[in-house]
Length: 232
Ligand code: APR
Image 1 (spheres, rainbow, N blue to C red):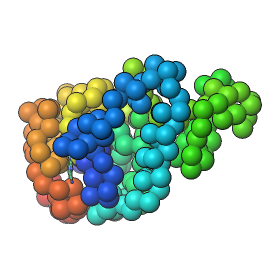
Image 2 (cartoon, helix red, strand yellow):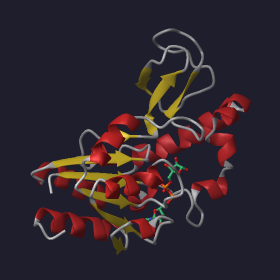
Image 3 (tube, helix red, strand yellow):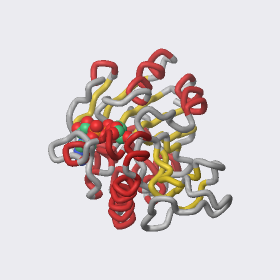
């Protein structure tokens, strides 16, 4: 198998202490997503949105990569073929775990974006409404995170990788959000073997040829060992 495409969701960072969205006590059970994760919510109350992302940025900055992140870094380093990691997560734990070239389809907490000129820069620990853009000075600045109703990043590149994948794995995602939830069907149509690694079956579990259930820190290293030894 020479090309592996991996999709990750909040579940891979859960054991690093970062909350998931839809599990019991998840982020969307504590914050109305329409207020903090939509362009309309940002226009209505930018201070609330910045506060939400400032808190998550602070938590993510304290978090450490776990054995699942590190196993994917090892897979990229040791696998003979191409290993592409696409994440819905906005933390930087894949990179901290040794992964390279991660495609952050929902953006990154560590980046800020200027809506006026498109400039991206390293976000300060705390952003505030109308922070001036360091490039053009305009105040239309925001967290560089993709909100509901906005186009995810890197989609052309992601569809291209899926169309020539030999193995597709989804790790720690509930299959609630599209287009990510459709990646398994795209990969299967291209002839890839598909495997879901999750704590509980996702909404799209029936689209996968194989399922491995358990905490990511246990099942991901075991799966990576199987792939590297040609047993997966
Ligand atoms: N190990 C493996 N999987 C886990 C673990 C764990 N320790 N803990 C939770 N999970 C699984 C849950 O079973 C669930 O299927 O992770 C998944 C988390 O699902 P969600 O909370 O819906 O997160 P995610 O799928 O990443 O959400 C996708 O929705 O709100 C948007 O932009 C946000 O990127 C996010 C997108």
